[in-house]
Structure formats: C-alpha cells, structure tokens
Image (tube, rainbow, N blue to C red; front, side, top):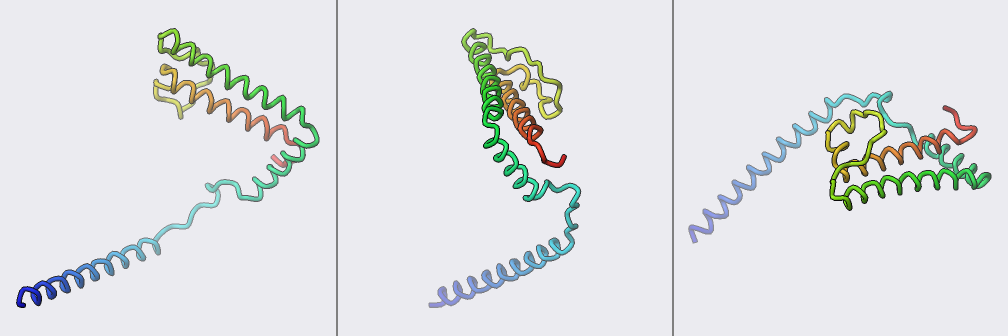
Length: 146
C-alpha cells in the first residue's frame, strides 16, 4: 500500500513539474511572438488580384486566339523533348556527360553538377524552359499592366 501512495505522489509531482514547464514555455512563446517584427510589404509576393487578372486575361486571349496558345505549347513541348532526347542520348552513349549547355550563368545553378551531370542538367533545362514559356505567355497578354 505504501508504494502506491508513494508512486501516486511522485506522479503528481512530475505532473505538476511538467505543467509548470509547459506554462513557462508558453509564456516564452507569447513573448517571442509579441516581439516579432511586422513583415515588409515591399518584400511580399504580388496579391491574389494580380494573379486573377492575369489568369482571366490569359483565358480571354486563349479563347480569342487559340492558335497563339497552340504555337506556344508546341514550342514548349519541342524544347522539352529536345532536352529529354539529349539526356537519353548521353545515357545511351554511356558517356554520362550533359549535352552542351547554351544557358547563361545563373547563380541558382552554381553547383557544377548542374552543368556536368545529365540528370541535373535536364532538370535545369526543363526549369529554364518552363520559366521562358511562362514569361512569353505573360508578355503575350494584351491589356495587362506591366
């Protein structure tokens, strides 16, 4: 009987210690949140209104001039397929070298593997192709403020 009383009092002490620790950590969290500096609005991404206006303008132009959209898609898929075939050729030749890279230097791809490894080079080329396709699509929208 004595051990049960001792165990329950030990458990109660541990429980109270844990509650005190949780309370102290909660107070520290509240203090840290209260001292947080507000975000700089100049560093924030564009708002939803810009994206909705761009999307509606793009859809309107796609419906008015579907051949323009088709040309952009064919160019995008052609470049994507070209990069994929180049990587497959490098792997089939067992040279395991990336194809020639005409892309300008970009600090995001500073690691040499982006230029030398076929797999990473394909990912980089596809990323740059996607960026170019989106850039052309946005620049091609008429009536959208810069």
